Image (cartoon, rainbow, N blue to C red; front, side):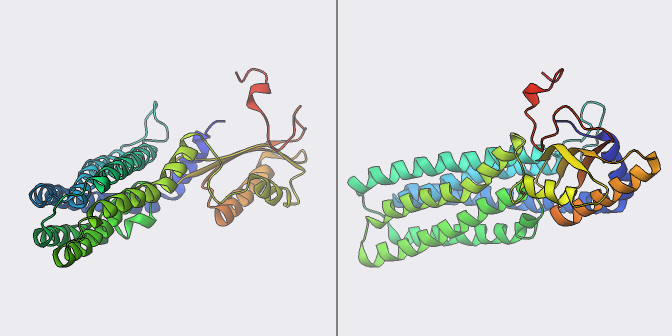
Length: 323
């Protein structure tokens, strides 16, 4: 599997204005992340101190989760800056994959935090303790307001890239957790239902792990060069073979460079013809792939003779000189 630098540079030249817009959007995302980082740091301090004072495990759990988000958002902020670094001879595609590494770390952190919260909640369930409900409500409500503001800041960015989506989910889960803690605090204050505190802590842990799992699976798939989610490789092969100029498709690979850049490489068998005619074929297929599958980095190798192995899928370990 390899990347076609020439094709990449061609796309960059043709879409210069579009890329400037992307850079502007990333800069705006970085500013919003900076505000969210500050809010999360303040929320952690308020909830952690409040949790110790009220003896609320749910409040402390929410504070710890906010602390994990504080560091996760710092990583996201750094990633938003790093992806703007220009390409060079050592990193011909720049640093766009930093987004995936950061999203992976964020999601993995959530899974670990969720497991710890479940453990502490189960332990407290068998050894319930008194909680000061009135202050618990006040502190949790403050945390909810802060997390809600942070979530709204990143809501639009969550649809643009996986890194922003990961940070957005962090903040969304925090807002939901803080709201749950507010409700529990009210019930503890009115009804003295202290067992609700560890129960909510376990619920927060489960919710945290579930919210992170999809992103964790998606980032692992990208890092292992898996076929992008929602794309069927055989369907793409049939789509390319449907073009009348194409006689055969083989050595087909589809992968993601980041959540915004999908790449494809394939060998296409066509009749023997001039280079200019071949270019017309590749232009048409590349445009169709982008419109139908959002593949924006296609590499099409045209051949007039069939390779030794012309299967759609080819085991690279069996290709001479490739290992």
